[in-house]
Image (cartoon, rainbow, N blue to C red):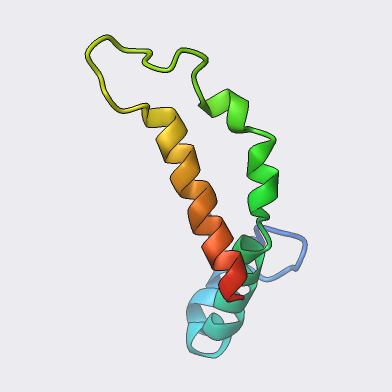
Length: 85
């Protein structure tokens, strides 16, 4: 990405953030953290059926239901993160 062009509607080019990172870094981190903390664990439930398999053991010989377990872990992480904030 060219350093002289602004990537978004704020009008600040990459060069600005690079040059003044020591001043703006805490604000940038706060915005990014606020964005990701706004993810609601309940919204993940809408996509649960896309990640989970209808077959409880989709691969012969595989004991772990990878997709279901992965999504459950993600939900648990978001729920614990939401309760901390």
